Length: 82
Image (cartoon, rainbow, N blue to C red):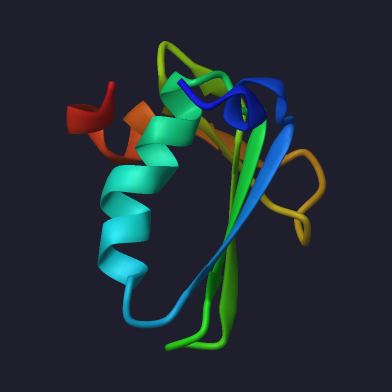
């Protein structure tokens, strides 16, 4: 495994034509590698997607920066992700 990936605490991925690959392959790879946080800069939709709280190789928790204290386990929304 790439030593840069192992020692990274945050990964920022910029995606245009590679958006689907980055979201479906790279983001889960970063989670399973123990990367604490991953940002996906989505150039197609002008959005930044932020993933964090990786456990068991998946990013598990969503929280709202707008509504203080609001957080959801991904499995509460998408049981297939548990």
